[in-house]
Image 1 (cartoon, rainbow, N blue to C red):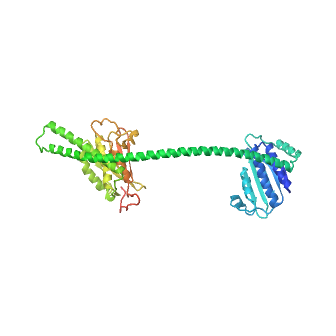
Image 2: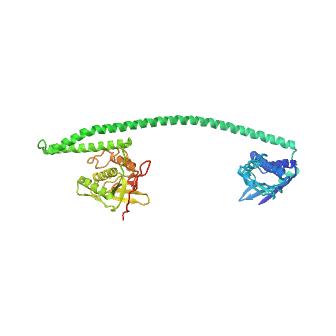
Length: 463
């Protein structure tokens, strides 16, 4: 729906002033706020002045347009002048002119909700401006527009002096608004400066805390390393003496004595394992562990582990099964560190599985360039809430075998750190009463920091 309000011919400087005055009057009658009245009048004035200066004449038409239930004030400005030769350049903001042409057009466009300019050399210029009615403005009807036209006809525009006075008032209002905005900006600047000072203080405190934590971590690593070294010698001596006693090198032992010596030997072995784990953790945290990558067959690693770990099975109720990988399945990684991870997984499975099977499998991860080796048991299982907890140092889950099976809570954290060194990760899938699957995922081709290791010559997917 379109409701025509007024048409003005532009032929003189007074017509330019009159168009601005009429634009402001119509904006007032349509219910626009003061700021929008000034925006509409200023935008119309800028475009009409260009029409007068460069085309030496034209016309302005005011109307009310409605689309999708929303009314807008539309101003159409047309001329039959030479057109704007560099319109696209002007609208992009990159046009340079000694007269300042183009800057006013850009500013006037920003004041309106819609500004459509069409021009070509020798074909004149057509400009369509639109400003949507504010939400609290009355809905304009044909009768209301008729009354508006009658009012505009009955009231002729003020003189040039009146327009200058009106513009001065608008300028003063704008200056007051700019001053208020400037004061708000100054207040925001002061608040930002205060926040920046607080952030700097916070960063300084964080740096201090980080340095303190770094020194504490270094001290812990040195303590663990020194303690481990100091413990190894006496533990080795105790273990050797216990073995001599059990071998009856100094004479026969009674049954009770043999039992007590075996307790001593078992405790010494457990302590020695804990010292080894502590020493490995200290070395990793100190960055003193090197990865010695070499090509090896997964089947060979499984064969070695089978021979080392089968003697640990204390009961025929538990079977340890290594599922044979494909004959050509190979890795380029540190076999010793990967074997250490698997030994920990399998040892834990043996400790916490009373009957059933412990199965070790290797499989490629499709499309990832990774291999996943898993250790599946039919043991007690672990609640989902404890899956992350068990990979923290000195953390253990309480269970009914706790009195019979002792642990330090260092094996799984060590596995996690070793997997990180190899560029992989560890994890667990488990539920109480359903057993556990501990897995380690490592790259087929270990890539050292700062460069890539050479790729293994060949490997096959399992069938």
